[in-house]
Picture 1 (cartoon, rainbow, N blue to C red):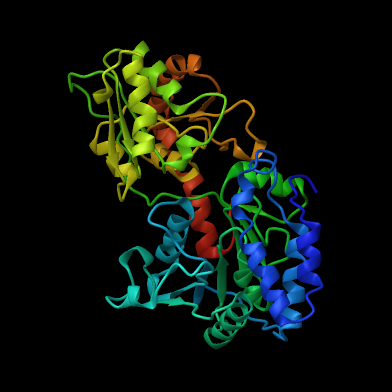
Picture 2 (cartoon, rainbow, N blue to C red; picture 1 turned 90 degrees about the vertical axis):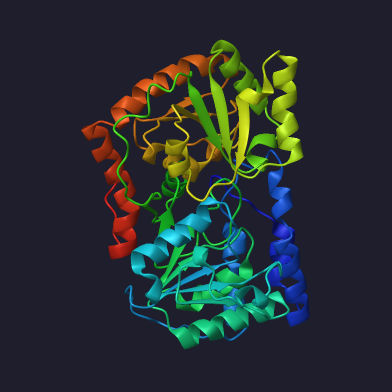
Length: 425
């Protein structure tokens, strides 16, 4: 299988564990693999884990977790995840699922694989960011016990639909939901690094990003292209004008999206944009730390460009609204990691994203979308022309035809969640 990650030694350790303690030790080793996925030969090149996936049913059988056949509907939906974060596309996807199904019919279960959460976080009630009727944290002390706890919890809830959206190596989630596979829908968001579960025959397989979908279809998986959505609101037919300033360029992303080593630095694209348009400025949304600030401001100063022309505005609850409120004229996606969800928010704000992508990036890292309102570039020399072209594409995007195209794209996810079916790409 193309894009497959294999770990024969660990697969053998899990399959051949002599007792429950040995099995748990092997699953702990599995959970600790994630940092190794940053290796250049893995990241962007490997995504499927067929050998490890095949162990999930075996683990469920070994733990005597009987199959629980259920009928599908949206009456009693459960979202199973490792945990959610303040920023990140898969957290927003879960929020959209709850919004579309109805919070009163949605339960969220966190496996808390890495023991980062505490029940006391729920003392004020379910956080507003996790709209649902109930939020549950697994509290078992070992991974094997978490698998059993999740199974027992789901057996009591008897969900009519389970959206599985766990972190990369969370076998507690994958093995725990396996006996309920008749209603489990695999939400494929681990799209450029190995992630458990993608090759298992759950009742459905949702692909959130287009490059991932093409890989899944190429691998012969019965995957549905759902994409993601942005809540429907009117897109400005034109962006604010007459401000007396030059081009305002926006970007958004967590720190790590800008700091991975690549052929160029993020600051190379910034310097190219601001040096070629002396009246332009940048607004940067998302978490920021000292390392990211230095990585931009120091190269600007070295190039003789006022660092004040690049402003870090921090995390915002709604990127689309922030882009409109700050009068962004163009959107330059994060580099070397592009943002799938953030690019969609830019489109929803009426901006055609420019996605800078390392030439040597693995194919799974290349942003893709079956719409014509975006651009991909590889070098800083292309920035100026791409931004000019982006402004033209943004006008087309804000036309009646462009808005119809965008509504159809966002509607695919919404139709799927509501009905279980989506239009073909």
